[in-house]
Image 1 (cartoon, rainbow, N blue to C red):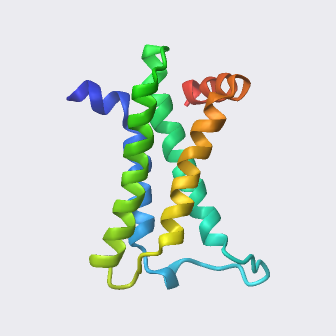
Image 2: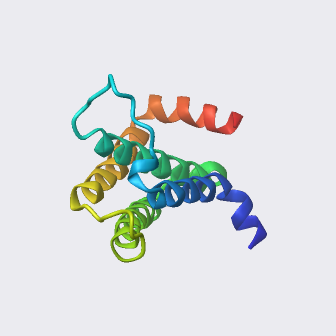
Length: 134
């Protein structure tokens, strides 16, 4: 158990960051008045799950160095499930937030984009070196 927490600590911490941000009232998030980008929240959702999937992938394959399709499939499923779970949490338990199917879609696109980019060897090698440094 302790080894599992040690191996996945970055993924776990980022999951809690997502949980915290998903539970914050929308009005408490400071907006910059001169930056009015339509649907900026979808980019934020995309980014959060891109980072989650990247960390999960890195934590999973850091020691193994061998990728397999089954494990990548599980990473995708768990990451998407977590995104849907956060939307359901907002719908049923967060009075000050609401669920949005497009947020879940942005989460899912972030997951698949991370896997796609991680499969590109040059990007993966560069990213793994950075994540190993952390």
